[in-house]
Amino acid sequence: MNTMKGDRLLEVKNLKAFYASKKGVIKAVDDVSFHIDTGECLGILGESGCGKSSLALAVIGLFERVARFAAGTSNVPGLRKEFDESVESNREDGPGVHGSVYFRGEELTGMEEEDLVNMRGKQISMIPQGLTHALNPQYSVGYQTGEPIEIHDEKVRLIELKRKVLDYLGLVSLADAGTRFVMDPGSFSGGEAQRILIAMSLISGPYLVIADEPTSALDVTIQRQILNVLAMVRDDFDVSLMTISHNAGVIAELADRVAVMYAGKFMEVGPAEKMFLDPDHPYTRGLMASYPKIAMMRMKTGGKRPRLRGIRGEPPDLTDLPSGCPFHPRCDYCVDTCVEKKPEYREVEPGHFIYCHRWGEI
Ligand code: SF4
Image (cartoon, rainbow, N blue to C red; front, side, top):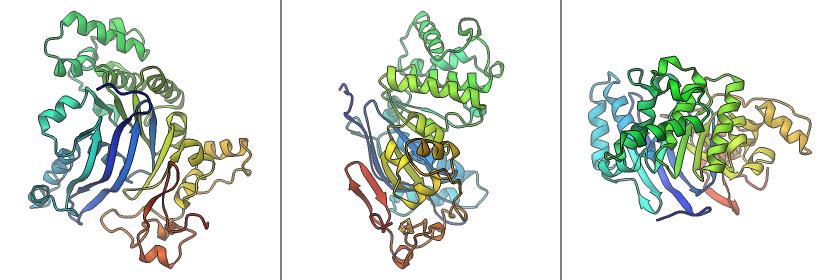
């Protein structure tokens, strides 16, 4: 099935992804629903630890493996067993993944691992967070860039593979790719390693690329170059993007729509312009007011003189979330209902979703 611009590519419904821990269940992703259409970029913005990377892992079908490994290496006796038993019994509020992920009309949750492997790297790929660990120091960058093709097409001829690797390393503007592709990752800078990871994520012709903190650990000039490469991927390759970042500037550069995440939940989702220039959720407003670049952007479009301020308090412990709205201890607009009752995640205008009792009155 070919997908056309605007077709529904990814549909996520009521997704939960919970870890097991000594302190209790960590609700990293807690009942999240969204979609991504062909050719668009959804930006996921939130503070560190709000569940963004766990969401990416759950979408691509790797969450359980990571959570099982974390439970097994935690030094807490019985935690791995508890995790396995919870997954086995599919306990709705227990550790594991619950909910549905549909990709090109096919449900990924519950899919056999073999089928998921066929999908990953070929139809959906991920640029992982943490440049220093993402490339294997023992293999040349050329070998690693071509690996997704070798995994999915055992009959590929070496000459074709090599040509494709050089094409893609050239596309992401890796300097001297023709002579350096035989070198190991240690010979490349952080920005070059990120270009290699982007080439690797594209080489199999995926429909969707998930980029997790694509510019973290890079200096400002290199960040700009990487953002340009990702914008080229979005515009020229007809590839949909799910870009995850704690940096609103990165999301502002790339996203058509923005989802703001807090304590494992989406607080507000809407068109990028609305989210940056006139957000409605108290958390989104606080977040945007913390970024000088966004404040300047608002001023240029007729907004008030920028007044930078952070959000008071700390993000909550995901094993012990506040009652009602998880943002209530930090919210300036909190009333009794917010403490007593969870808000409903609802579509308040076409394409604009919010998780707040007081939408329309504040
Ligand atoms: Fe603030 Fe209440 Fe809205 Fe939560 S539900 S964001 S506490 S106003």
